[in-house]
Image 1 (tube, one colour):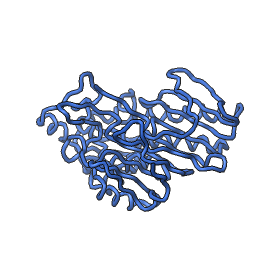
Image 2 (tube, one colour):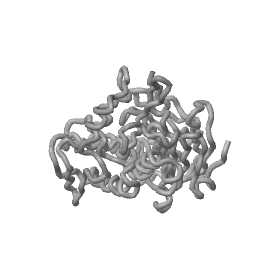
Image 3 (cartoon, rainbow, N blue to C red):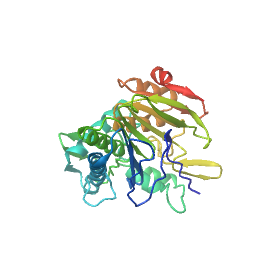
Length: 333
């Protein structure tokens, strides 16, 4: 069985039910505007506080269009995307947006000793975590899938990306969603929106505060679906969580999830969940994955190397560990 337990972070707002495939405007509270739709294989919800009417609606529509544009550029499953164009060649000129994404990804990869890896496309295909039925691949399949991957598999010069081998498969799934969220926030900001949240399957970017009050964000317990670890009181930040309970299956009492350790080719075992606060969702997205692979000690050390970044790591033993700044922002349950 494949349980999908998104979102991993839940806004403590009166969140309307997502209407799949249907655009629906709601104003359940005064001066609150919300729309949901399916993008990037998840439910994306944009909420604007303190602004309604035609101008606000146009801003939200434009924010969704920006996310759709980024998805078309970065998804391996979209014809004409940069990852698809790179599939069978050793190098190509990238769109400026893709180059920006990969540049940050390479920075996080270097800082984490390769724990964040954008070259695991073949490995993810071998595992088929979301397959029906899912399966545990043979060790030889995993070794073969890792050929051509690794921290030194990609080189970016300007907008030109060079791969170590033609077979190296570029996968931007661990960072591109964050970039799309940031793009949507910038569209809203340029349109004059001052208070908003973009929530893509539980990965959040907050614009401003909630009309003079902090946004209240609950952090999901990684093993108890009906329980929260605590509540964050924050504003004007991104909040991203990676957890082994998001997409997984179990076989013979072992949990196999979608967050792989590039060193072994198997699901990472050092953490149950990681929550990262950062100025951008793109940075938080990449760091959450890297810290999850590294585990509490090395993961927190990684987060502390990035100015303005704070985090919580729940280790494999279920014990939470935080950076000093995160501890100051959370109310434990």
